[in-house]
Length: 204
Image 1 (cartoon, rainbow, N blue to C red):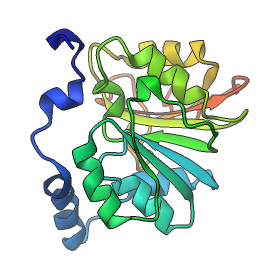
Image 2 (image 1 turned 30 degrees about the horizontal axis):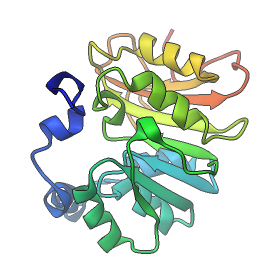
Image 3 (image 1 turned 45 degrees about the vertical axis):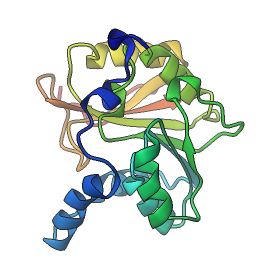
Image 4 (image 1 turned 90 degrees about the vertical axis):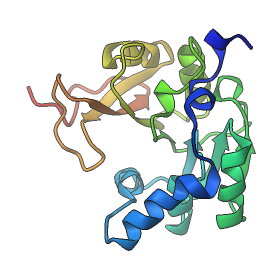
């Protein structure tokens, strides 16, 4: 694979497995809530969740602990070593999201941890299409990522629309701080099916 086409995550990764997780372990020990993503997702009471780009499975593990049927997928096998050790009952799959084919659907797909901006360049459209195929009508894609030039909120919405997903909510944090046009972080909920008349979370 050429340098230009190399997966962005594999290009910038400087920690693996337990070292990556240890930052959150320290934060939790200090009394911080490290499960904002799981809290956000549970508002939708999903029975099943695909943790897309799951890394060490931090989000998926917490959702599984709360009784959700979880499958985690990540390109990086080193990160999944930690996920499998910490939650051996959860299926953890090594796969490129641009080639995702699990043969089932999920009530909700979460792509946390900047997954959408760390994909292989020019694979974003295919990743969103593949994710949409793993949702039933009415299923949701929840994705949070830092704003980047190569994936603006407008471009991400366009990719979602092409995949049959309509914007339902947009926030600037997992704690549901209102979305503003100048926000540095983009948290979006897209739903498979017809657009809704009003998008939650936006300051107008």
